[in-house]
Length: 233
Ligand SMILES: *[C@@H]1O[C@H](CO)[C@@H](O)[C@H](O)[C@H]1NC(C)=O
Image 1 (cartoon, rainbow, N blue to C red):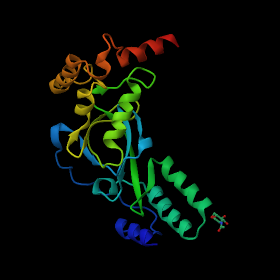
Image 2 (cartoon, helix red, strand yellow):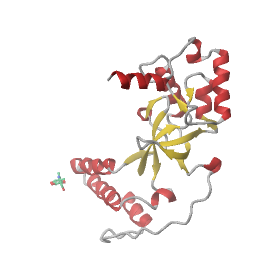
Image 3 (cartoon, rainbow, N blue to C red):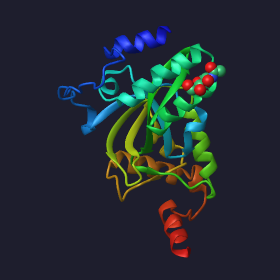
């Protein structure tokens, strides 16, 4: 019940209130490198890494930016789920959790505390990893897992792609993840979408040393591989 009370007092909500007024928050502070906004994530789950350039992350709704925009239906479902769990009605609790998940949120148990968190799919900006069935696709995914799983990430979001993913730079304990992936020769610099000279250089250094996928004389570009597959269909 501590969670329910905490959530209610946090949102200043008596549950009977029918409409929560969404106040316009003040302009966000400027973010480094011209990013639109910054996310600080909860620890990343292993299953969250899809491949070498895509990861799903969750941000606590107790952070001010998220707190301001939790849909009321999600707030109510979270409170009702906590009640159902307290009553050991897990069928009802699971149905409520499904509602929360369908709305792009999830309850996460972090250090024995139930936290309502918002989901973001992140496409790592400026790199392209080999697809899973291409050489080094598996290695790229494994390296990304090794870098981020169990860690809280800082993600600078610049854009959204046509699949609704957030395009961003990921930092993990001060390590710039794209830099690490490029230097290990596990991903390509995505030059068509990203003109940063440092990323170009990190790819070139790995190529010159024939590290990772550059051990092959003529590795297939992931974007050409995808294009060929689309044309064959
Ligand atoms: C669980 O909740 C549902 C829906 O509110 C209700 O129909 C059901 O009787 C409850 N089950 C138990 C064991 O309390």
